Each structure stands twice: as C-alpha cells, then as structure tokens.
Image (cartoon, rainbow, N blue to C red):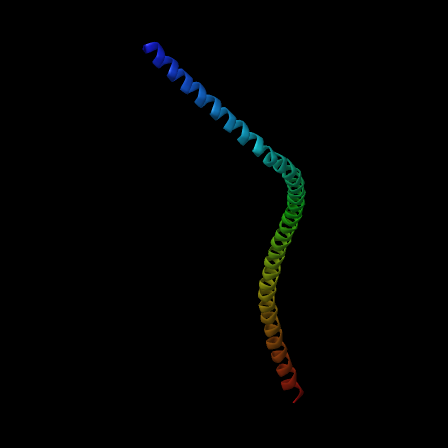
Length: 124
C-alpha cells in the first residue's frame, strides 16, 4: 500500500512539473517579442544619451567661460574701487592744500593792504 501511495504522489508531482514547464516555456516564448522592442529602444536611448552628453559638455564650456568673465569683472571692480579710493584721497589732500593756499593768500592780502595804506598815507 505504501508503494502504491508513493507511486501516486510521484506521478502527481511529475505531472505538475511537466505542466508548469510548458506554461513557463509558453510565457517566455510570448515575451520574446518584448525583448525585440526593448532592443529597438536601446538604440534610441543610446542616441539620446550621446546627445545629452554633448549638451552637458557644451554647457560646461559655457559655464567655464561665464566663470572666467565673472572673475575678470570682479578684478576690474576691485581695481575700480582702489582707483576710487585713490581719487578720494587725492581730493581730500587737495582740499587741505586749498585751505593752506587760502590761508597764504589771506596773509598776502593783509600784507598788501598794510603796504598800500602806508604808501597812501605818505602821498598825502
């Protein structure tokens, strides 16, 4: 009796295994068309990836050029600020020199008025 039961169980397992194998082969066979579609799209993806890489390199070049221009402009701005500070210092120094000149002229005028009044008094 045990031999008969073992034989029946083995037969059922073999039958299930055989049927599942057929289903699996049929499923793989039907999905083969999907693999061809994927292969076709891989070519398109390669082209788009190449275009993307080229565009990325172009953008990197553009960004590098913009960075260099920005650094140059920053240098020019810094130089302009230094020149502006120099001009401000020159104006400040010039203003103090003008004050000195004004004091000298005032002194000369006072001396000139005294000299003119002395000569005017002698002529009378």
